[in-house]
Amino acid sequence: INELLVGLSGVFVAVLALGFTIWQVILTRIHNRISYRPILVLATEHSFEKKSFTVVLANNGLGPALIKSFRIRVGDRVIEGDHSNVVFNLVKELFSNVKYTISCGGISDKYCMPPSEIFNILSISFPEDVPMTSEEILEWLNTADLHISYESIYGEKFELDSKD
Image 1 (tube, rainbow, N blue to C red):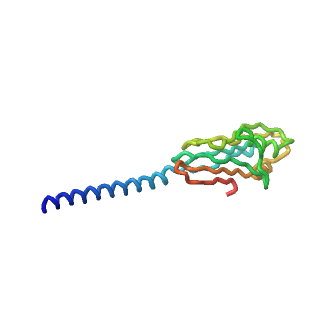
Image 2: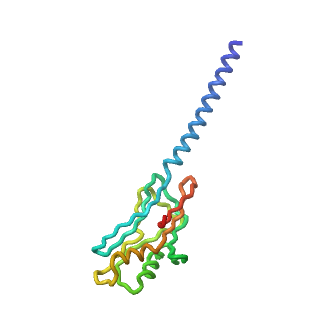
Image 3: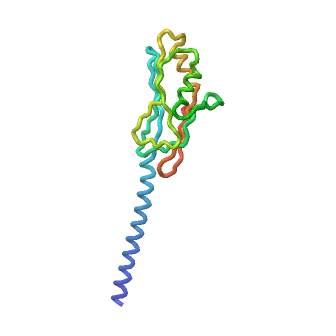
C-alpha cells in the first residue's frame, strides 16, 4: 500500500505541475496579446508663419502594425492612386491652382510597420504670396479623412480614422 501511495502522489504532483505549466502558458499568451499591441497615431505639426504643414503616422505600441488598408476620402469620394501617389493626388486636387512644395508618401496594403517607426505622410509648404491664409489651408487639409485598417501579429483588428 505504501508503494501505491508513493506512486499516486508522484502522479498527483506531475498532474499539478502540468496544470500549472498550462496555466502559465495561457497567462503569458494573454500578457503578450496586451503588451505587443500596435498603437497607430497621427500627429500634425504646422507653422502658420511659414505656411507649412506636416502629418506623420507613428506606431507608439510595442508590436508591429500589419497594415491592411490605407485610404483617403474627401466627402464621399475615395482619392484614387497607388500607395506612392494617393497623398500627392489629394494635394493636387485640393490645391490645383496654388503653388506649393511637397514631400509625401503613402503606405501600401500589407505593409508591416514596426514599433517606434514614424512615417511622413505629408509635408507641404506654401510661398508667402499664396492668396490663402494658413487657417484656410488647414481648413482645406482637414476636409480629407485618412482611414487605416491594421492588425496585430495576433490577428486583432484595429482602425485609425483621422476624423475620430
